[in-house]
Amino acid sequence: MTAKKEVEVDKLLDELNPVKKKGFDFGPDDAIIFSNVESPEAPLLFSFQGHKFGPLDDGSEYKLPRSVISHLNSLTVPDYKLVTDPVTGHQRSERIANRRRFACVPVG
Image 1: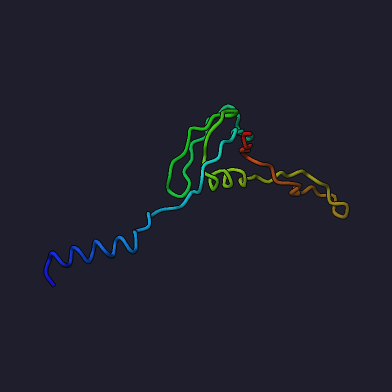
Image 2: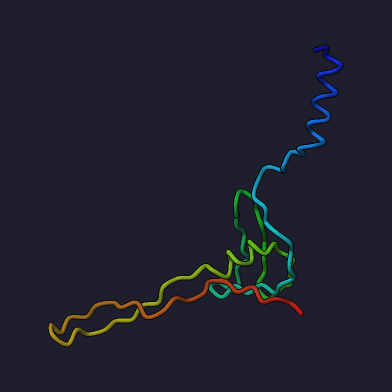
């Protein structure tokens, strides 16, 4: 095959099978109000799937991809309390709940 025909064949193949963009598909953007429950005074800078986001300030409105919103809403830290063992009388920590670190509330 000649070089000209090879180029035409490559072009045709590209049209039939377009190259998918590499990387993570974040999905559509949604408007949210960001709440930093853990540290309201500190802006949040973070990376997710290799992309950087932020700074996000507490109480401000942003447009973020749904996957990022879902990720932020899923982050929690455990809450513990001290309880006394009735048999031994020793104190131990017991997990009582999970506390959210951030909240992304939809606008509208």
